[in-house]
Length: 107
Image (tube, rainbow, N blue to C red):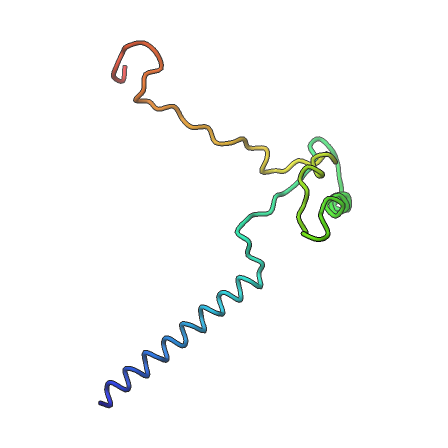
């Protein structure tokens, strides 16, 4: 009887610690502002600019209520997103399908 109460106490202690750990992890992620999306980086192609210019344009293009940056506004001011330089992924052609002729096989 004593052995089972020790096992039960150990089990409850582990479960309580696990619960506290999970709640702490949730609070840390919330406090860090985890949103699951990455921030875009902006630059002006072929132009010299200062951090102050960028901050001014970013502030003017950000909605005060939602704190969302209007990307069209940034583009109108001459800024380009670094992530926008890379086009969408192009699917590679299927080598098993023939692009012409009736030949089959590798050569």
